[in-house]
Length: 262
Image (cartoon, one colour):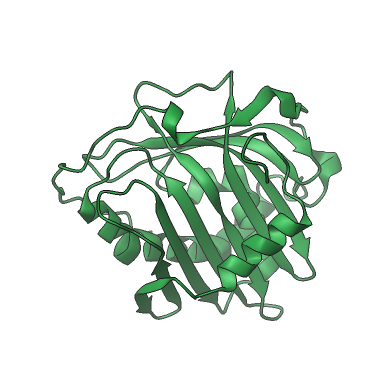
């Protein structure tokens, strides 16, 4: 995609994302336990840009269910304990929209938010969901949150049969600010594996939940169902990291806090 303007990813962009999800060359293995593996790429102390890749084998979740769970904004509000606020802003095409997401960071690090252009594509029985940061005039940075930048983030879901799949999450982000080393370490050894586990648990409970919450409403599968307003690309621009305030949190000391394991 162009570095100068907002574009909706094409087939080549999806193919490139999938190839990077599957490639291990240049990545450093940092965690490998049970069904979950985590790699990092070029993480350097003092550098603000982070690149992490997580892969989880889900033996009891179909690719179709995983795809639904990662799309369903209303369900995310239930299972994602780190979410502060998330909503869709508008649609661009049948497989692309713009949305807002804010999340809790480990104290005393400031919480973050992001506005992204998200696109998705089924490829046979596999699926890709990916996003990158954009600017929208109606949703400027907030005073109490740090606006992060997604350079390219997303999921690759590979079907392994009727009731199993492999989920790969890859994030290339600039959280804006020099994060403490302990945050980077915890993200690779604790936060990322924990987040993958929570996604898996959310998938196991999704069918029952969905039956009680508008069970036939899946606009990511049936675009004619969408209630989002259509927005033109001209309302969006690339979110550049250098245009945002740089917050130096590198000296913040780690605090003890118990994460919700449910």
